[in-house]
Image (cartoon, rainbow, N blue to C red; front, side, top):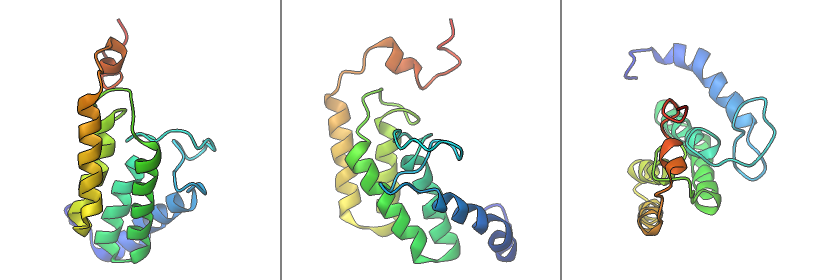
Amino acid sequence: PIANVDQETLTELVKPSIDYVRHKKFRSGNYPSSLSNETDKLVHWCHGAPGVIHMLMQAYKTFKEDKYLKDAMECSDVIWQRGLLRKGYGICHGTAGNGYSFLSLYNLTQDKKYLYRACKVSFSAAQQNYCSLSCILCNFPFMSVW
């Protein structure tokens, strides 16, 4: 919608790609870190459910099909169960990215469960000590090579 692409083009070109990614979902509700990876391990913004959830929410807003919202809610459950990361505060490999998923879903649904989850992730992160250099650098890949 923001890119001024007509609905017909979105339905013809984008929707099949979204449905293909949905088809790759693991039984756990998580998604692979790449299309060729069959390991159900990572739950980071750039790997798995925390990244896919945003695509699914946008698909729900664009195509108005409940299957996308249902899958986004399942992603949220995966993030809640397995996504309390200890790699730092960052968006990509840290708690902020996973917490942002809950805030986004709350904004879409107004279901306070997701706001609660975002708060819990935030409070948990505030209690962690992420002071090691490796935790800081994991979200700045160009700085990690000295």
